[in-house]
Image 1 (cartoon, rainbow, N blue to C red):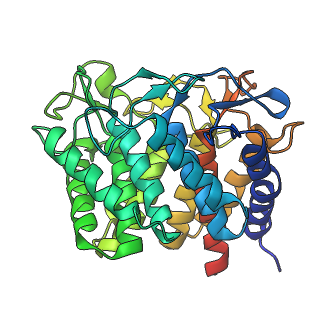
Image 2 (cartoon, rainbow, N blue to C red):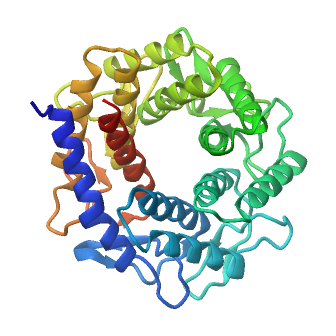
Image 3 (tube, one colour):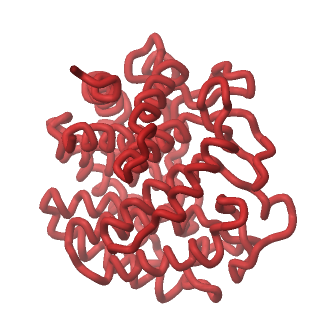
Length: 381
């Protein structure tokens, strides 16, 4: 008998392969330059006039490279490498060699020259996939960028600073995505330096980001990663609880360290505090006690919920596989049920009504990650 999760995972993969990827590969790429457009407007028309953040380019490099690896997009490798060429031609940072500026206009002129550590994490992730596709420069690029981050942007309390611009507080979010990239590089190379970097991020998670009393993690910290006492310091994003569950499960596989205590506590909080009881959708923001601060919902949180359920199913939770299937069904019911095939709704309001806005290219990273996990899990059973 075909399980509900197996059937829904196949539906998800079919949507990705036959609708989303062709839409973004066909309408989402500027043919003259090879860059990705920032967003897709209604009816599958790209926003031709929006400025282009380089993080969008990095995320789409990952999407197209991983799609090519799966055999879902024949032109995926060429598209991914063309975006890299675009970055090298137009966005190379004038001060920090090996990095890229933050944003360009539609004429490919730099309009924001800062370096953003969050963005760097996605360059590292994309290059891990380029390495697997045989790019001879990928590992050199990654090592050069890490040398730059370590030399210029190491934080006094550990980890890495936000980037080249001064800020009043630091975030866990860039570290979470660096953690993801480090684990990806260790997986494809077996090089212990990447696992050592991952150990460093896990140490930050355990010492600063995670609150064992409440089973949550916080978003914003002081310059030395000290806990903030204001409202910003109390912010909890359920989507990130889900993302860390998946990452900690990946870290256990790579390191052999038992992550059960963290995964189980975060999963409990995710279900009891972070989820809307009627729909199972994740709220955008809560506090540590579970008070809802923002009852709106984003597409990306639902994809991370799918990954968290799959991770917990692999850890032996008897109900998680069923919940993974329900999360994929919820993704289709609330975010992917559009007249334009391959188009995704980005945001719901507090009443779960669609907020009319463009579909950002950045969400394809989240959708692809969740799709790959669902596909991998089914093939492993």
